[in-house]
Image (cartoon, rainbow, N blue to C red; front, side):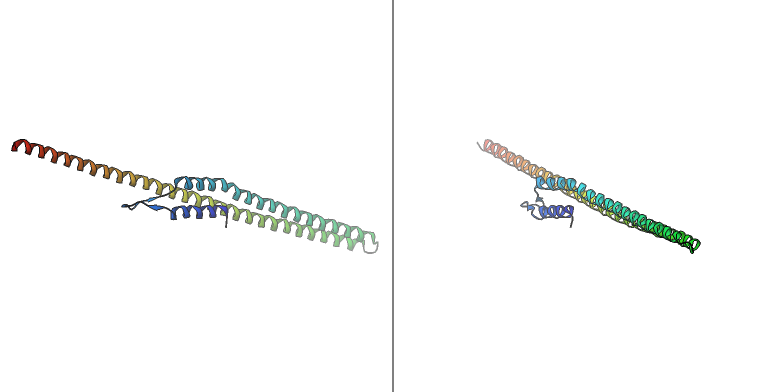
Length: 189
């Protein structure tokens, strides 16, 4: 599990710990905690990028090792070729065999290099795709949470507006009743 996954779980925990606002369908969340976690996700994303770089470096090591093995095989083939040439009776045969060995060694070395490059490319592509998925997921979660927080703020403001409107209506009604009562008392006097 990556650090980003852990931070996303922390974010879900903050949402799970939200407090219900009485007489409302709304929940109160700790915005500072959410902002801190989102910042940690942003800071953690370069860590996944470092892991992808390590994979690329590993690819380079594989290619270097394949080149070294190819060079060793070629050097060994060339040594065998020199030894065969030294034998007078089989000089022509030795030259042909040496050329064949060198060709096979080169072919085998090229195959090692191609295989190493293919493996490294696959590893790098997988790491890049995984890193992109993590970043995309983190951005999507951040947008979801920001939308939820904005919706909560809008709903809370609407509730406050409704409450103030009802309170104002009550004050007007009470004021009207007081005025009616005063007018009634004047008329009765």
